[in-house]
Each structure stands twice: as structure tokens, then as C-alpha cells.
Amino acid sequence: MWDLRRLHAFTVVARHESVTRAAAELAVSQSPLSRQILALEDDLGFPLFERHRKRIRLNAAGRAFLREAEGLLHRAHLVREQVTAVARGEVGNISIGYVDGAVHADVLPRALRSLRREAPKATVNLRRGSSRDQWRALARGELDVGFTHAAPRAGDDAHGEVRATLLADEPFMLAIPSASRGTAKELVTTLPLIGGTPQKMEELLVGLAELDLTPDLRTTTLDPLVALTLVANEQGIAIVQQSLARRGFSGVRFRAMPRGFRPRMQIHRIVGRNACPLHKHLLTPPRPA
Image 1 (cartoon, rainbow, N blue to C red):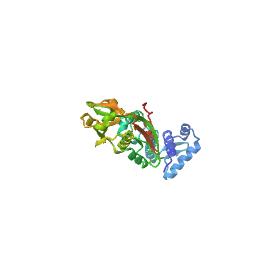
Image 2: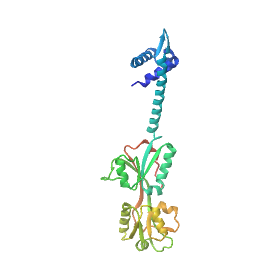
Image 3: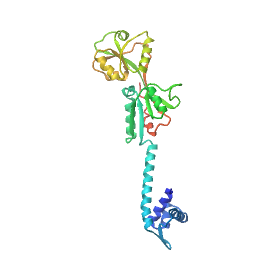
Image 4: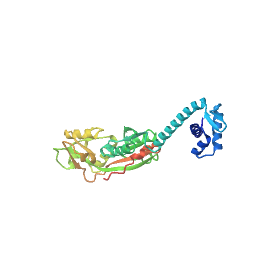
């Protein structure tokens, strides 16, 4: 394998057809430069120059080798530029996991806007999944970054293998049909509850149980927008994050949860230990509550 520096020295000598002028351009002594050219010819097994006293000229083999050497140097330059861009987080591929709550809280959209602004040529692969699924994917190196409801704790997958940052922390709201009347406690116990993901519903039901409230859970859906559509059609009530309540929804009114209800909607950004450099552009500051 040829030394790229030796190839570069050859191209400069070949362009000038003078070791003296080439040495001046390269800011090196003539003797080491001459030795580099002789060593290159020795590696090839044939001369590249015709030598006449103090003057040198490329021979036919030298002219052919010059074209190839310039091509190799150009490709090496392109490779260096590409790898440098990847190392700087300017290009490349990034895999991002997310929960729906990260979208509704505008955490993921803000992060992607930041990424596009700083690295417009990046390729993004979005992967929807539960918090636990994302922890496992990060531990296996299948994700670079995840936006989850919770960060791994001791005993969880990926605990100690990721860096976690809390980006959003907001209360839950009670979504009720516009025509419904009554206090939040009355509505929770008299109208059917439309639930969400098992993991999140377990947390919400525990929060209600602490208030001695036992809802009638009849319908579940993974999509909170579907839940709100069902609420608008008077199929029951739903517990949703405050971000969705801020948007408004035809046929739906939003109430504060009963006093003392403790669960909150949190979104954490978790970054894998070997995440690609592009992840730094997703590190947007937490949004004020």
C-alpha cells in the first residue's frame, strides 16, 4: 500500500518536473524528497521520470501513474471529508425511538427541527415503541436516542448504559364529552374509562386507587387521539396529557384531575453510550412547564 504523503510528493514533483521547485512548495529539503521519489519507483519496479543531468521529465509510465495517483488522492480527500462530517455530526444515519407523548408534548418535533437545522443531510429512522422496548433497543445498539416516559432504573434494561435527561413534565387532564356534567370524581366513577397503553394505564389506575376511585375500564386504545374521538362521540372519558388539552378538541371538554392525583406525564431523552455523533443536535433544552 502506498503512502499518501509519498504519492502527494510525487504529484508535486511531476507537476513542476523539478525537485527544487517541488521541495520549495512542500517546504522540505531536496534530498529527502528525492529519496521519496526513488523509494516510490523502487516499490513500483520501474522509473517514472527520464533524468537528464539536473532536469527530470515524466516518462510514459510516469504520466499514466500521475493520473492514477491524482485520482487516489482525490478519493482519499473525499473519504476524509465524509468521515470528518460524520464525526462532527453533520451527516450520517440516526435511529430515534419515541412514545406518542413525546410527539404530543412537542418534544420530538422540536428535537427534529433542531437536527434538521444543524444537519440537513442526516438520514433519520423513527421507531415508535414503549419505554421498555426502547431501553432494550438502546442496550442492543439498535437505537441511538429514545424519547421515553421514564428513564431506566436499577434492574431495568439499559440501566447504566444510557444518559437520561428530563425534557417534559406535565399533569394529566380528564377529557369528558362536552355535554357531561359533574365533578371530576363523579365522572371518573360514573362514565366508562377509555384507557391507553397497559404500562401507562397501570400507573393511572394506581393513582386513582389512592383516591379510592375505581373507574369502569371498558375500552383501550394505543392512540390518545382515537381516545379523544371516542370521548367526543360520548363513548366515555379519557385521561390525557395536558399538551393535548391545550390544543382543544371538538366535542370534548377538559377538567383537572381530582385533587391529590399524583401521576404526571414525563418525557425523558435517553442517549445510548455509543450513539452516533448526530445525537448532539437533538439535545434541545427542556421546555418550561
